[in-house]
Image 1: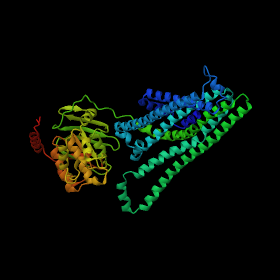
Image 2: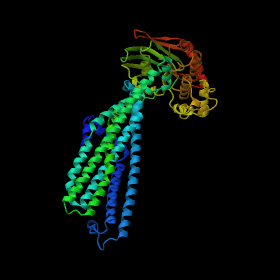
Image 3: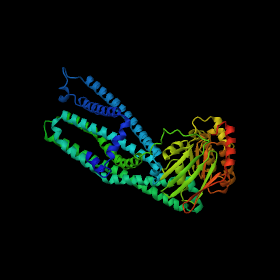
Length: 586
């Protein structure tokens, strides 16, 4: 058995065992030790219970049993009572061990998900540039299940190993001459452990890749459905999905076939081992019938474990490539922390970005960009020219090649700017709410928001009539409360209203609305957030009409900034907004 485990690991990354042991720490060493102790207790009590059956079958020829009790020979009633007690203790200990194993496996799966999710949340945006959404969905869901099954297989292997050692020790205690059969048993175990391990490892790795591919094909199916229908490619899509599904099914089938073949080999080798024991007992005349029965009962307890052991090794082989994928994302270096000692000035003060330079993915340089609270900066330019990359820098998510800004007479480097912009909001065109209800979605953005405040935000974005029936309890994942793409974008803008950020970036966040509705909603957002800097990426003329300044990225990657509101008009409006909200303007 150990040789198979070593052989499989030889084809894997050398650091995997160390990474695996690191994942055991959160489970608690005491709980793992308790499981080992319970497994040992289960093996001992189970072996004793098997031995106590023999005096009931052979009352007069169990010298190995009667001779170890002081005083008078034990009567049949006492033998039956001892058997019942041993069997009951065995059942209770095994039950407790199974319960603890369930808690360990459940906790292991939960902490795997938590760790990889935390790593993804804390990772820099650049680390996720090459990651597909399907692979990320797989590593957070099905992939973790495979790893958890592998961990559960390890627990079963631990029980099987302890039970094997205890059963063989008791068998040799009952009949020392049967030690001659041990080499045969060990040889059979090694043959069974090595059988098809490499093939199963290869099949398991391909199975993980096929599952990721199927995730990719199934992603965001409602939107893909319209694309498929409009192109008239229903049959082609069916054939493509069927091919991917068939490949995944073939991988699963082959894994099950290997398990069945391994089970057959185990059963044949077990029969060979038992035959060897009987042969030794026949050649060694000193082995009495009662001892032989006791040894056979002890070894018979190992037959189910042999089958489970083979299956556990296959599950373990399947878990290794899944664990590799988990390690890839759980081990990503986090973004450097923001400068938390910097206390930013809040609202009402304009920020001047003196220099902002990008090197990747496009060489872009912006100079003398003013961001005024209560105003809308429109960013426009051709597709793929760097608008989203610029927005990522403004949101503090990507470190630029060069950055200098000024706020209230204080010079800011990018770390200070990133600390200031933490009170921000960023909505892109492709994001969809993932919460269950409208209330959950809005509370996610502002945990202390009252029902009245949430209703007011829905009115401002024009969703109050649509949700008049169920209101805040409308579900986002059911047919009764399903919202259209434009309505979902309105809901995300309601999140921005409740958060009241210092900087809000809307990257094509209203493109699902018609031009008139878009102008009305953005105008309302500006009105409700007089202290927020609005940065909108859009190509629509209706948004340009609302903009206070414009940043256009030309084909030569030169950014030109144009102020659409003069300083006199800006000052008058700022004073009016400040007076309406009771804020002092310096």
